[in-house]
Image (cartoon, rainbow, N blue to C red; front, top):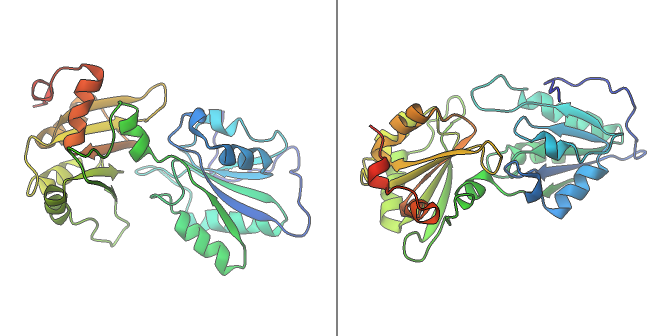
Length: 274
């Protein structure tokens, strides 16, 4: 399926709702179409216009009505992306034309999906927006390996954090986060962290032990999912060695020890890269 990043004129006009359109932000989950919620599926099927992120699988888009206009607005870290302001303009234009608009996003719209920005923009224009949550890759990734993010014996909480700051932003204070994770026994789930893995590793080692278990999961829940299990001091080396790339999540914490138990893999100490 071709995925243009700019809108194209559909061969079959989408059905209009009359004078008032509507907009729904829908989380498509990590990729497996069977992980869609029933509410998300219904919204996709009812849409007359879908603005689709790059990380949404074709199997999910296939649930759209054949009468719907589908516009691919690619958003992926490290790649050429459709400007956010342009996406918001498209959303507002379609709503004003009376369309039932679905903004279809990978994962969850409100977890590093810029859903908050889109809701603010539309509400400022007087448009009511609905949001349908999706399973975020930070949860689905480790679950796909048979391991929880929290555990009474190993992790008392979980932190979702981005490894990619916007231009001009100092980004995450990894040293402070490492100290907090150590003292509070937290699992760290890092989105968009592959490109900055060397720095993240170096900074986290100021507060976490070198042997802290780490999992890197690429394309979580999809048939071509890849993962590696290592230790914090070998994070960057493992990503390089195994050719892991975006989209990936990095999970740091003692819960990752359960991956070896769940899959009867070689113990972590024997799998360390370097």
